[in-house]
Image (cartoon, rainbow, N blue to C red; front, top):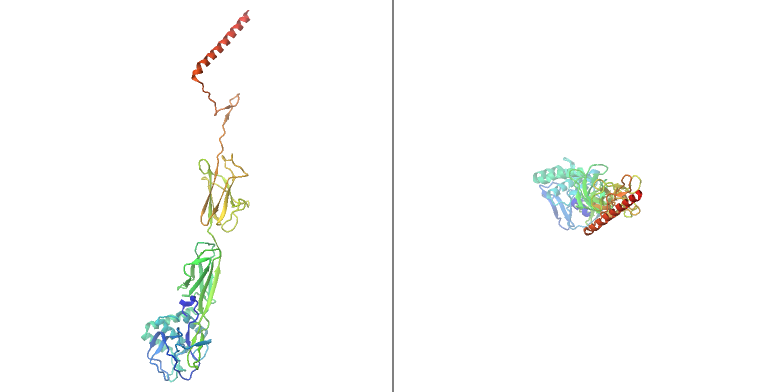
Length: 474
């Protein structure tokens, strides 16, 4: 079958093969039906040849296109049933050379379902050449031979194609070069990316279809992709025509992205089928089209995109960032370590959950964290000016969940210390509060009475002094 149908799982493309040596042609019970190709004239002469032209192209048998490979035998009936047979041999019953068998298998695989008359004529010509062709002046080209012994005049038919159907003539050279370059056997391999895979992020996988035992890549091969835990843009792709590897973008959707590739490759030997109940008079056909299934698989692992935690330490009253604050990053239980993207614990040099210190703006950032996971931020020690209200047995903390590809913002506020009143002690005196003096306010209406009391008191003092003096003199 043609390459366009390989990945659909269709496995039967037929080609006409020769029957055993026949004594004379027998008229089929149903008229042959031609498919795609060209009739070249005049027909190659041989004993009792009734035809005026030679059909180079496909026939239709059982609704499928088939190709004759033993020149001059009877064309196949369109309704003749067939049964499994043996490997394809040449018209005279000889085994085909391995490279010839490989070329036939590839040509059937690549071109047997063509609807292009030029390609079909070229394919028929090459199949006749490989299985019945003989060089010029070979005795088997003698027109005195009957249909059973006549060989295919390869050079003569090619000259007729060149003169009558230039497109088919050009196709012969193209198909022959294609078969030489890409004949089987093939190998297939799939290579997963070496870099860590991120769920939701596409990366490149490589598919190589090579000639067995070599690094030479085969071109133009349809490959079916079956992906698990991932997606691809197309599930059927073709190996590049320039001979480079096939590169496929795969986007992981789960933890174990896997790619399985399936393709049809040329078989080592085309296998024929024999006609049923014909008395040994009709041609045989190839049942497999010369193909075999190849597959390859590769897998890797993928994780969610890493996340980031941004820590912020602020003054609870002003909202300003606090520098040099020490904060421990833990898992959601506030004890275990958080987990990094590579699965290792986020620890410091002491082997404990890492401690970060805020910068001048009061922030610190931790990148490359596994997601999703719960993260807690716990204050280790309060910065200067904020330690008055710090309780080491129940330090300030906050928790949250970091999601794939996102930044989790965690903020912890500290209450500044309450200012203390400075105390000043004068020289030789008692302590005195300098910044908290008490001011007494008096009622103006009572001010005179107060003054009178002061005056009376002072007068009494003077009287006592005078009496003392008098008493001393006496």
